[in-house]
Image 1 (cartoon, rainbow over the protein chains, first blue to last red):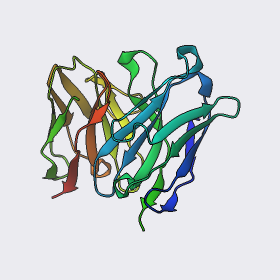
Image 2 (tube, helix red, strand yellow):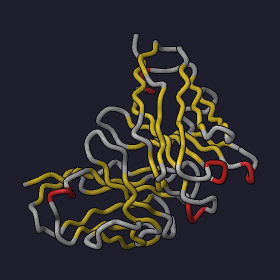
Image 3 (cartoon, chains in turn red, yellow):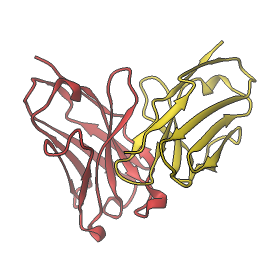
Amino acid sequence: EVQLVESGGGLVQPEGSLRLSCAASGFIFSDYYMDWVRQAPGKGLEWVGRIRNKANGISTEYAASVKGRFTISRHDSNNFLYLQMSSLKTEDTAIYYCARVRSSGWDGNYFDYWGQGTLVTVSS
Amino acid sequence: DIQLTQSPSFLSASVGDRVTITCRASQGISSSLAWYQQKPGKAPKLLIYSASTLQSGVPSRFSGSGSGTEFTLTISSLQPEDFATYSCQHYNSYPLTFGGGTKVEIK
C-alpha cells in the first residue's frame, strides 16, 4: 500500500526557516517524481514544486512564488522527500502535501497519491 | 501561466441529482487535465486523468469530458459521500495549476 506521511510543520516567525519531510513507503520511491502542493486556509490548491527521479537527473522545478526561497530534495536510500523553506512569509501559511507524480512523461504529470498534509503557520 | 477557471464555485444539490462542473483553461491544454475530490480535513483524491479516464476504484457515476480549453466533470447521480470540493488541475506545462475548486453541498 502506497503511503506518504508528512512531518515537520509548525509555527514559525516571518523570515524564519522550516524543513518539512515526507516519508514514502509501499512503492519504489526512487523511480518516481515527487511534488509538493500547498493549500492556504480556505483556499484552493497551489503547486509548489517538483523533484525528478535519478534517471532524469534529480532536477527540480518551482513555482514562481517560492523560487529562490524553497528547496526540494530527496533521499532515495531511505525513501524521504524534503522541502526546505526559508525567508518565510505570512502568505506561505498553508497545509503542505507531498504527492506522487503518476509518471515522468507529460501525459502522467498528475498526482495519484497524496500525504495527509502538515500545517505550516507563519506568524509573529 | 495557464489559468483554470471553475464554475460554479459553489453548488447545492440533492442526493440523486446529476451534477456538472466546468473547468476552463486560459489556453489550450489538449487533454492534460485531472480532477480531484477533497473532503474537509483530508487530502485530495484523484478521480479522473487525461480529461476522461477514470482512476481505478472510482465509481462509474463520475465521468469527465472535454479537450482544449473546456472540460466538464459530471456526477450522474449524486450520493451522500460525494459532497465535497472538486478541483481540476492541468499538466500541460510548468507551472502546474489548479482551478479554484467547486464545493458541492447538500440542498
